[in-house]
Length: 216
Image (tube, rainbow, N blue to C red; front, side):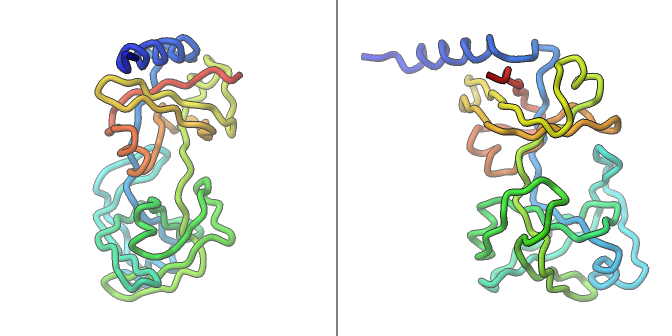
């Protein structure tokens, strides 16, 4: 009879030996809840002409979580309420949701890097002062890692590259995420962003640690 725990420990140990990082270089996880980025025009429609988002807390990359929320309504006519708006305003409105959310809204958005919204899903957004019919802009964000230039240089990783990521066992569910996109910028922290579906599948919470694996 096989000892499942012993086998898991051997597998994790083997994969860990392939990792790029030591304990001090593990990647912190940030679990991304559903959220919305708004254009200036759409912010005016939803919240009133000239409205300015109010900051709840700072995020990386010059972004911030605001105190403002909108409601999402799909073809099912079922709503997802209190979806946080992130600032500052962008050129184009973008909605980032999880696959689980699509079952409520009855839409099928593509998995995309942030900003790639051409031909993506449609949705209705409702705010306190109005509503908009978003003809495109709804995506499921791809798994991605934000890196500082120093970390990327140390490990020989380039902006736009794709890597694999290992989640160890123990209190977590041992998991390997494939094709995680790397983004490198000087105003980033070292952090992997995944949505709530991926986090729940692996038992991950904010602040958990994962490691980048060497490419074969």
